[in-house]
Length: 311
Image (cartoon, rainbow, N blue to C red; front, side, top):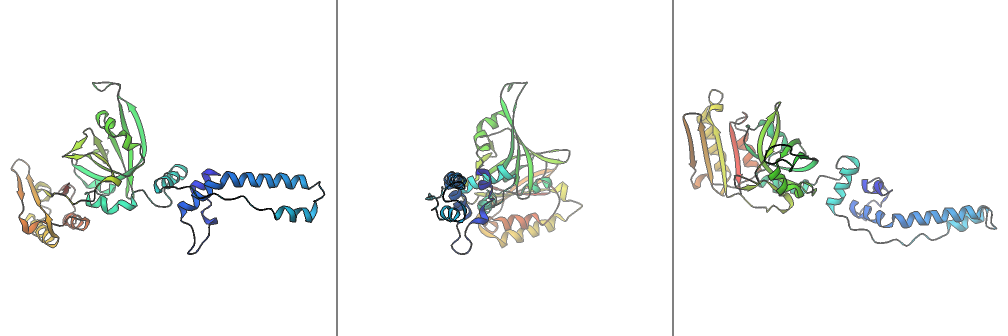
């Protein structure tokens, strides 16, 4: 009975209309009174069975039992959104009422997080940030090397767009294992690798480019980055897209989103040059998801153009 309540099997029994209780309150009400109602029903059943052979048998007996007052109901238990969603995931394998990430969508975007499915388009060894929940966690004990005997973690992370495996090496896992096990939505920054063309995140360091590798997304401040970096790999662009046209389109988009956040550019041509530029005030921007999306849409070549917001 308890599991059925937690999974939402009795949600439809609540009042409908403007006075309907929210789902969490309804489930809390059922849980608070479940045992009391079961005891009351059992008592009525026992008395009814005993009454079948008493002086109050037949229709009169039924009327007498039907008139008995029900149990005094307690106030609803207070259930958090995190508890509600974790019950659904644990009992049904899916979230029914929403996702733990739903309320943090904008915060994740401002923090520079990308959807998991976009990892497949990023360059190997690049650092990427995603907003996810942990759907599976396995602890593995290291058998050889200087870390022998210590635990590492193999995790499955997911958002609404897909899932990805993350390998948390001992030093990293020791630092963040409590967060991994917390059930909280996470902001994860890690190095990207590929195995049989499938993306995989590798975590060996506590910080990645000055940023904490794993954070509780609910505690991440909604703040704007102190700089935005645009990296252009000329080798991937040349012959497929006009480099000059790329620069012109980028300039137009940056001016369109003018703000106070400085923008720097990193332009790389393997073996020839690796140039870094600090763009002037005319190209400072107001960071947001629309800006990032517009820049990424200029050229759909994996690894050719990367945009990173640094907080």
